[in-house]
Length: 141
Image 1 (cartoon, helix red, strand yellow):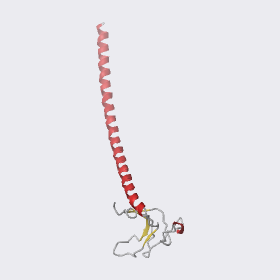
Image 2 (tube, rainbow, N blue to C red; image 1 turned 60 degrees about the vertical axis):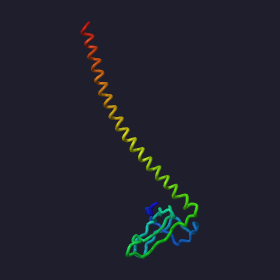
Image 3 (cartoon, helix red, strand yellow; image 1 turned 30 degrees about the vertical axis):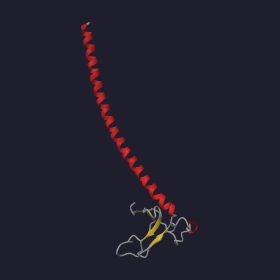
Image 4 (cartoon, rainbow, N blue to C red; image 1 turned 45 degrees about the vertical axis):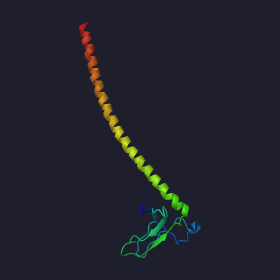
């Protein structure tokens, strides 16, 4: 799984990284790093820290940065680290499959509309022929 993170819209942060949930006030107050940048809460998507929130300087891992990094959530237990990445992969696969099915459904609806138009044209031809035959029969009488 890739090592990506997402940013929450909430401008919140925590005090210490004690790992104790009861020590974390919610909502978490806004915080800025030493660079003066307001820190959003990010979410880790690595296999080791899936779903774990953290704060980091926007310049973190760049040449000029203040090295600010702090976990908001406590570390997960080993079992969670084993289970969650697999569940997320299954969820992503199901979402991809569902997206593909919706695309296929859209294509099928387009085909259905084309078939409806063809059927309507054929019905017009058939009705025209029936009308022609009926008129021909009336004229023979």
